[in-house]
Length: 335
Image 1 (tube, one colour):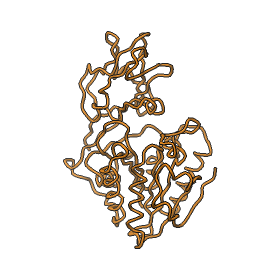
Image 2 (cartoon, helix red, strand yellow):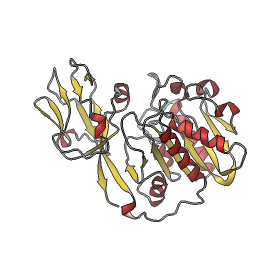
Image 3 (cartoon, rainbow, N blue to C red):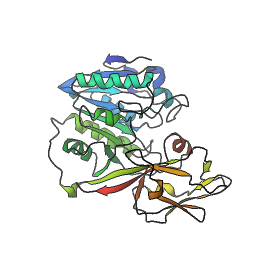
Image 4 (cartoon, helix red, strand yellow):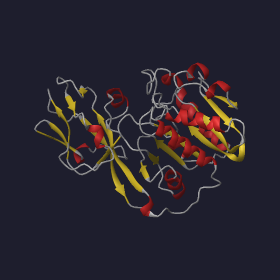
């Protein structure tokens, strides 16, 4: 596996689907397009193969400027096209393509080498800003994520909307790697397959192409809502969980995803445990420390939150929970 670089793109890209991309782009490829402003905007899509909104928005952007000069140069990367061909986040033999970027704590592999090469190439090209486009599997509003509480990062995020999430874990994410060389942001565009998500991402990308600079000026606090991710919650290895199977070790509440971006009070129930009495989940803070007992307790075989908090990324997709996590827990911060 080596990284290809192409100036321009095949015409078939304009009509391809996320599922058909792998036959068109079977190997990791970095595309470069010239524009009026020479410093390129970097765009990555399909790092998770089941999150198609970014690709559709990028496709719409390429169609718009098909016969005219781009306001700014673009470099784009099409991520995990193999997983996209099957509509999956990743295949079982693959790492998570948004955990393998510089700064990762995963072993050195051919995939991590490619992401390191991409970051070096874009640093040499003096990249203007970086945008990584994603979807959620659960019910979540559209929001932007940043890994640095910096004015330019916040300006870039606010262009997508007032809801911003600041995080430092998990490691090895694309926006964290690019944060070392330029302002960077991850867009969370709701569930895949929704037209409003594609339109929102397209309008954002198009707006970024017209930026001449990112102003290093504080944003008035009343103009944005910023939340800090304080813990990632995973279901423990060996715990059989389900939303439907009454015989599982952990029967999760079917309404969990409705709690996303809602402040939930202490004693809120996440699920009920059977067959054993051990804590079925682990919460890890941004330092990598286990902080489960700061957030969860078992009361009469119920898994409960013990302090007011705000979850995000809760989903009913059991495969995604296994491959990633159950959720993130957040708190609002003042800048």
